[in-house]
Image (cartoon, rainbow over all chains, first blue to last red; front, side):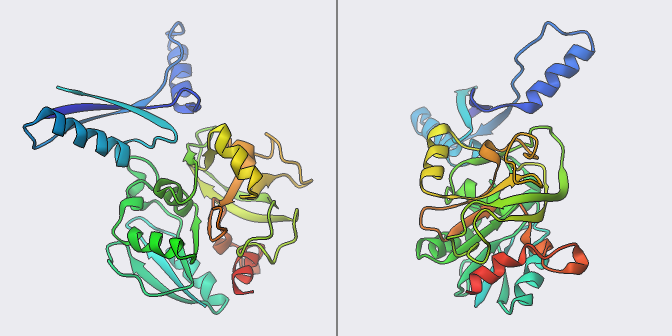
Length: 79
Length: 225
């Protein structure tokens, strides 16, 4: 079973990389694009046939390693 | 006194800290991250470097290493534990210290001497310094921007867990003297039990005049006292 995971910085955490990307887009004339926030994207496969069990494992992997919940949020979908 | 220095793939200040510890007659053993058992020691050091190439988040992989079970047990028993630079990042990733270390605000790797204010000298790691003394120790990091939510920062202040703050030559703690954007100019914090400290500056690089200074010596002398 395949999943995709998105990890993003919490809104109260500054994202200087996102800001730098936004500035660079401005430099190439795309200056109407604002509020860029950079995050991480993972795809993963779970060798489990029960979707609920697989979701629990993905959630656990996010909580334990893929995201640091002090600074990041995560969400995931089956794909 | 005995110390263990944990070596992760990508650690690069492990031998520097061994040399510094041995200068102060602290018997030091290097311990590989895959070991299941750690020799008994008074002190454990998580050294600086780029464990696991800083993949995912700095310190995140190292915090899940086999040896970390032993390191956490050592800390839970009240043993001294220091995380320097990448070691500080590992400590926040394990949850032994609160908060997280983000990319430097200006997105640049910073390698230079900084002024630090000793905010708390009643810890086993800083007792040889005077309170509110200013010391000069180098930093070398890309992710030293300490972040914690307001409640955590409030608790850190209330419990006197902030040990080191970035300041300028005139002891000013402000945005100008903050090299990396850290909340409250924080350079080092300690846990509530006062046996686990994390710091971005490198005291091990600052124990020989020939290398530019000896202000880092106080950390090792404090441990011995």
